[in-house]
Length: 450
Image (cartoon, rainbow, N blue to C red; front, top):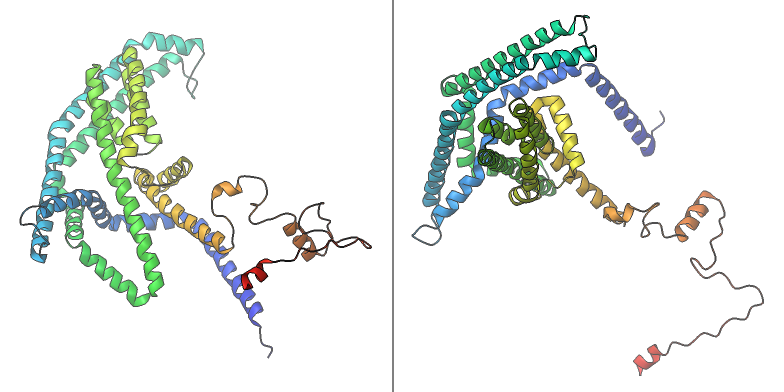
């Protein structure tokens, strides 16, 4: 039986793995709906754990600051282990009491006014359509616009009024149902209770969980792999914590600033529009535009002049957010360009909705940093420059492709002869019969010997 050499065995294994990858990719594409259904079902089961981790990431910076302030209290000196445990428990209680106070204030003060504004907006939109019925009907008749069934513009307008009225009624019912559900959420939602308990355990026993994870990794991985894994886990934690907590603070700042500005300029629906602007601002780039468009549309039905001033105000506010609030709160926590952020929003929104739009941004940031680190290390191993500016010009960088020597080597390796330009590379050989120039003796060695 003929033995297979190492190179042939490697090619055979590569072909088998390629075939398996192609088959697996085809199965995934063919059964993508079932796979996505299973993934969503699995995430739904793990939703208390995911929500608890999300709460812990948000509460961790505030809890760390309170714990740091408690450690400065007398008696001074290095605190004991029992004292640190007491400080940890006290800071945990303070943080969750603050969170509970914020939630109670939100549902008691803001939510009722939000419902009143939504109901008033429903009446305003219905009245606006009824009062401008003649203008809209004239516009439809002028351009001979009919619906897809060929009905007249008048019937189409009546249907439009019914659609708007039904949509606004449904929106009011949805808002009221959400409010009723939020009032009873502590009694009927076990997921939130479990998530809160999980977040408390994560925050209180953080060091113990980290030690257990490190112990598990050291038992099954090599030391260098443990170091690499711990480094990237720390980077992922910093990116996620910085992005989520920073966006929460930025959302509150933008919403409060929008509310104060609209009250100063006496604009209608200040609370409703400010909440919409603040919530949509959580989504980078696209969220600010969404909030501005929704606010302008609402104000156009009430007062077009107020909508114009709101447009100017929201542009100024977004400039302050992009140049003042954002850099001071977030800094460079992501480290990726706007293109990758938009791509993450599109992919995350298409797969998992609004939650995917938010979570895919830090995930893309981590993947981008990992790939960039891998590319830099491989370029460094090959002796090539790692900065992107070296690759802006046509061709390869000068440090890698040192023409004409590299071109001559490439031509020699391909079996073709290529003449190098005059004066380039090494000195050309002297022609036959030419006199050699006298060499200057090197006297430095002799002088050093003396």
